[in-house]
Length: 330
Picture 1 (cartoon, helix red, strand yellow):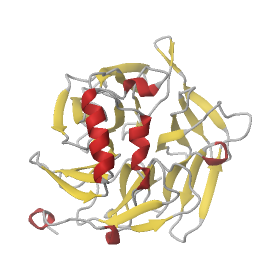
Picture 2 (cartoon, one colour):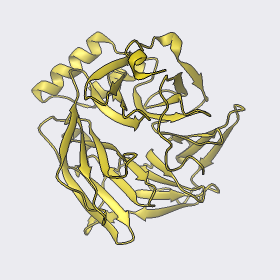
Picture 3 (cartoon, one colour):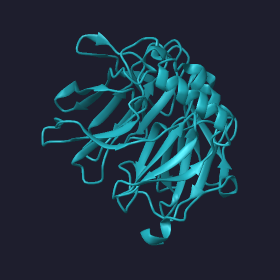
Picture 4 (cartoon, helix red, strand yellow):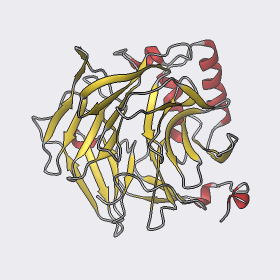
């Protein structure tokens, strides 16, 4: 389907299928060429669940004794050896490596002499560099649910070690390197934009650019790229799926919002009284408060949706394929 035919895409509830069961906070989704779908899981101590095309589920749960108090897997990256790098959004924060036998090992728990707070997302790029987003330095993350606070930051871990490469981000959420390898994109949930930074040969970032600003009722969380240069974004609270077109325009692909919920959250956001209660009000949607999006299927045209509150994964068929992700052949 060419781009000219895409503009009529407007999903309804009937366009979604669902897979998985008994999942707890499956916030992040990672698909592979084999047909496996990996999702974060906060149950049983925390770990990752593999959903196979046959419908089987395998739980890779951290072993008791290795688990930090309040461990909550959020965004994660699949590594070449089959293990996972997990951002712990729990109170103790940090990034952990989870082997499939349940061994959980600290990967990064401090930066520049400071203990890491709750971490949001981990992305491994084609050059084996690890990009980490931390939404805020605040231990009580609710303190940063404000449009005028921007204390989120991005960490790069490469052969030179770990260092902060971008800061002053308005509640940093997912971060990914684009298909060209020349730009790092970052969703700002409370900054209500997606920004980007040029990447030089040493991994250093250039000056921040606002790539797109989101409209009323959109609180961006996850995103992914498609092969035609578009960016697909999920919005918590309003449960919307938006595509940013290559020309910068935006379309609502799906709107699963409740008008009263979104209006209340929007008013709170504008007057500085937004709290976690406004966030969780979006849990009742069919998408369970959608948090992330990732493409998979044999043609990379199945979009999988992670969520904060559902016990299963939603999926829909896209007319445009997603890009081949770095973990596709793992």
